[in-house]
Structures are given as structure tokens and as C-alpha cells.
Image (cartoon, rainbow, N blue to C red):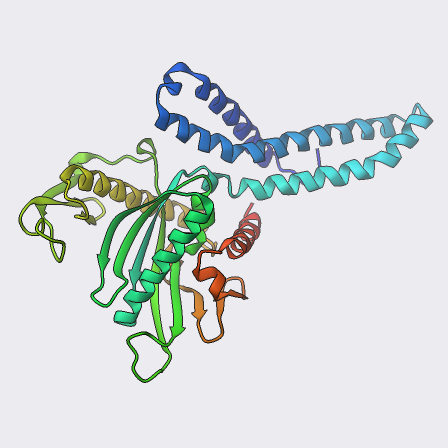
Length: 361
């Protein structure tokens, strides 16, 4: 093995290799094949592990070959074989190191890629009506990006603004790699432009906040129904004849944490209840995950959903047709980004995030 590989890292990779094999066996089990949802969940998890496991196996094979060549050199009983080993060993050692670095890069994003769906919470910040319009533009941007990726998007909740856009909107985005690619979007998004509501042509600065919550499977989190107060009420605000007449709105309060969720978007009480519990579970999972990560790596700046969510991460400057991501210190075409052509920015953020996290290994 390459000398700088720690035993802890190898043991972790061995466990992930075993997990990959176990997922393959589960996918072939009869009870799994009868449950389409379970097949999808396991397939996403196995697909997330596959590149990592393949790279790790290639590394092990190359490292073993390098060890065998080193043994020939050490033995020295056959000069001809020793000369061949001397010529081939540097190349094999370099290849093993390259494969190891690839394994490490994949290792730090494996968990994110195994998450099958995420919940985006987009809320208007400072800026009045323009902030709500901006929040609506962000909703459209993410929906366009999801469409490019082939990811289904479900609107769990929305609170439209009178002048357009949203006071808040909650989207569920499903698909392989959704959390890995969207996780770095959490934070304050600032826009500088002349609002449609501005009569004097002055540039305004407005903001919207984006939270990205990995949606956990039910088994990943202990949520006791007894800890949750559920109230069924009539819907509030504009919305047609159903508002204030039929009790379909679902309001949940998780007493241990104080987390509250209210969903009233559909006329079906059962659909609203399902969405409310899904959102509560995701928020609780995110809170617990952020707490655990803060304790494990307090100084790590790339954590999604930590206290650093409140930082300004990006500025959209319409006059210059530029999007400046402050974490990268780089600019991108605003006309591309706002129409959903976000992949170059997303890839750069993943690379940046991966480099920071590799430093913690």
C-alpha cells in the first residue's frame, strides 16, 4: 500500500466496499423487488457508492502490484527481474497515488450522493416587494436547473406575494445527486438590479435566503408521534372557496425542539398531512445533522445548514450580467445561471467543498 494511507481510511473504505456488496444482495431479494420505492432507495445508494468502490478496488489492485515489484527489488536474486521491477515501479506507484486521491475525493461526497431527495426552502429577505420577486426568480432558476437534470420537482408549500414572486416557497427535488449538487446553494443570495417596482431607475439591493435540507428516510430519524402536537385548521389567506371553510390545513409542533410546520397548499387534508410530516422530519434531521457536524468539525466552513447559512454566498449583478460567488471568488454569466444553466458553477462549488473537506481527513 502507499505509505500515506492511514489504517482508519482503509478500514472505512473496506466497510463501504462491504456495504456496496450488501446493497447488491438486497436489490436482488424477492421482498425488495416487490417494493418499487425500496428498489429506488437502494439503487440510489448503490449508485452513489459504485464510483468510489470501483476506484478503491482499482487502487488496491495497483498497490498490490507495486508491493510485488518492491518485493522483487528487495529480494534481488534475479537481476533481470529486478531491473524490470525498477523500471515499472515508479509508474505503478504514481498510478496508485492518483487512484488514492480519486478515492479520497469521492469519499467526501458519497454520503451526499446517497441522499435521494432534498427540500429547498426559499424565503424573501430584505427589500420588500422586490425581495419577494427575487425569491420567485430563484424558484424559477432552481426549477429550470432541475429540469435540465431530469429531476422531478414538487411544490410542498408556497406563499405568493401580491406584487409577484413569493414570500416563501418550499420545493422537494428528487433525483440521484440532487443533494450533492444543490447542497452548496444554502445561504443568502443577494441581487443588485433596477426593480420593476422602481420608478426612478435606481439600482436596489435585495436578498433571499435558501435552505437545503436532505430528506431522510423514515428509519434514519427517531420522530415520536407523541412528541408532536397536530392541529387541523382551516386554510388562511387567499386561495378560493376552500379558504376558511374546510379544515384541511395541518399544523405540527415538535415539542422537544419547538420546530413548527404548517401546510395548507392542497384541498386534501391527507395530502397536507403527508407533506407536513415530511417537512418536519427533514427539518428535525437537518437540525440533528448540523449539531453533530458542528461538534465533530466546528471550524469547517463548508457545512450546509450550520450557523453559516446566514452568510451572503452570492451576488447577482444585473447591470454587469455577472453572478459572483463569494466562496469561490469567481464570476459566472448571469444570463446562463438565472436560466438554469448552473452546472459549471455547481461543479466548481463541489470541487471547492471537496478540497476543504479533504483537508479534514
